[in-house]
Image 1 (cartoon, rainbow, N blue to C red):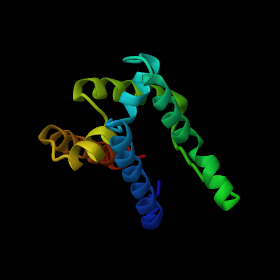
Image 2: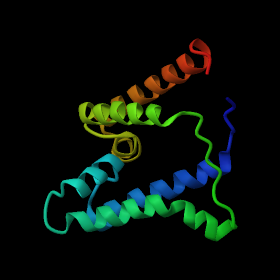
Image 3: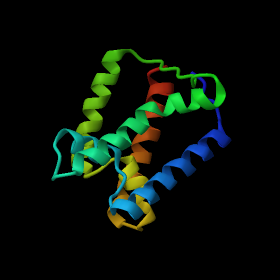
Image 4: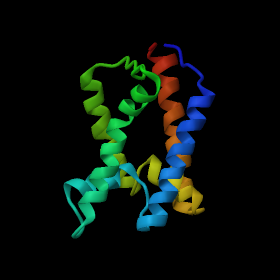
Length: 143
């Protein structure tokens, strides 16, 4: 498997995510953590809480359509794993999000911007786990 280096696309994506996080904080005073937003759609915390969360999730899901409208092509997505791998991965991520009190977007983007010690530690943990997983998958398991 080859990883393609895409600095300009990655920079643009980071700027969009950061801008969205700042806009959400400025307008609603909320942290943009994707799993917290998703759980708030399923189990809303109060009146009016579900609408903005659903709108944000709809924007995340329809993002490829915006790319299509701008470029005339759908983004290329190559996923070299079977569906059961995604199911198991989703369960593992769900457990990690519960124990870590948040996800990479909440801790890595918003928490680190606020210089939260807990978020910095969580993000370092995410990065170490990611590096170990990639190393094991590519060099030990031969993927």
